[in-house]
Image 1 (cartoon, rainbow, N blue to C red):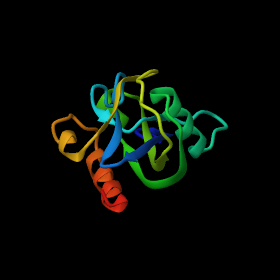
Image 2: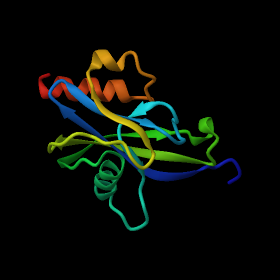
Image 3: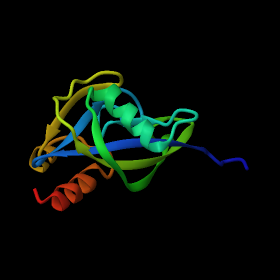
Length: 139
């Protein structure tokens, strides 16, 4: 059993507005300083979808609807000095209006085009998910 790392559930939310995708600049580990979808750890007793809704609201002040799981990504926490790994469920959700305001552990929150995203330090898989969402949205 030595060498086995604990895996915690985590969520993130990808929201499309027109030809842009919502990203936050992470103020804390994991992926500190990188741009990613809003998200974080699932709390005890919380469903994945409820955690995604809570994290979106905490980090950006935004609400969304029509949450749907897009993919699961294993995050090796050891690369950021964490003692645990994360199983991240990435949700897509429908933008419900408003402007993002960064708070909680988000240093910045805004909508970005794919072109703008190419100049940003992105967390793993963010660009691929954003590209897929925008393609499916017809942007």
